Image (tube, helix red, strand yellow):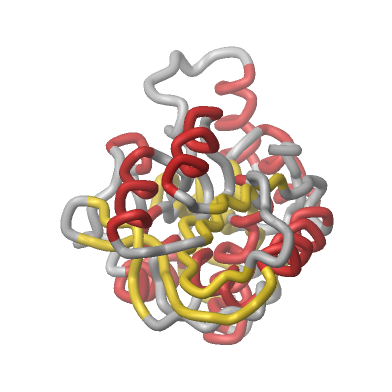
Length: 257
């Protein structure tokens, strides 16, 4: 057993929570306190009633998530929102959320870990956001179809599947970039084009990104928003478990996206 204060202080320092910019609704850090002790950790991609219920059933008193309690914006605390809060308070579960600080972390971040899963070695940053870069990039010599197959196999482990823009026969990936989650956007495509990236690997993106990518000569592999963001919370929870000597569990609640 350890204290909530010690774990939160450690996570804030490790992830540089206070200095990494993010979207307002991310509200990174400790989002809900508990009575002060932690004996078991649960980790999940999304904060939801299903996630909270599973954390309670696992006797966890710290829930680490990527998309936190306020991701959907301001909401009256009633209905399902009340049920979530009631379950947390009743079972004395603290909630810690980390969005972009976790995405970009060099060791426990979604982007670096996805590169490893796909057999790629990052050598540079990618996906500029304000004063930081979220993703990673690098060089390779691999058949793009093979890279897409690896992404699909990974996505299927988490209840999804990968989709890829059209791949010419014999096409090889020489310069790649990764931005997990909703990583396909006009901004990331422009950055990829300007930097000579030929393959962009993301979680998801709107339809127009496939059209824009084709006109720019870029193949986009959409490996699933949920799947690509399971990596960080799992790695972070495992690390905190080792650091503080408390057990942990991952709560799998796939969205199919």
